[in-house]
Amino acid sequence: MEQVELDGKTLRADKIPLSTSAILVIQAAKGILGCGYLSVETADKLGHALAVVTGVATYDDMLAAKVVRLSAAATALGVQVGMTGADALRMMNA
Image: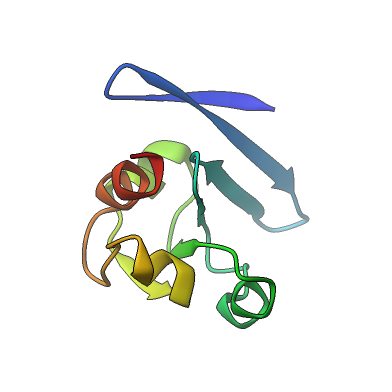
């Protein structure tokens, strides 16, 4: 487990190394920002808020990248496709 600072708040961040890449997630109070490896369909089945960013290799990349997919629960929190990962986390941490 690692930590990411955003607007003076500490968020949990996790990295699972794979042979050619890694699975990256940053957890907010009400949802998760994840890399493209994660499934919106599964998040929807479980009722979890998930915003997905792609083409990322670091947590900083995740914060700057644009959200490309969302679960219904993330949409209900106000997260929108096209906003930055940082903005998505702000919505899911409010």
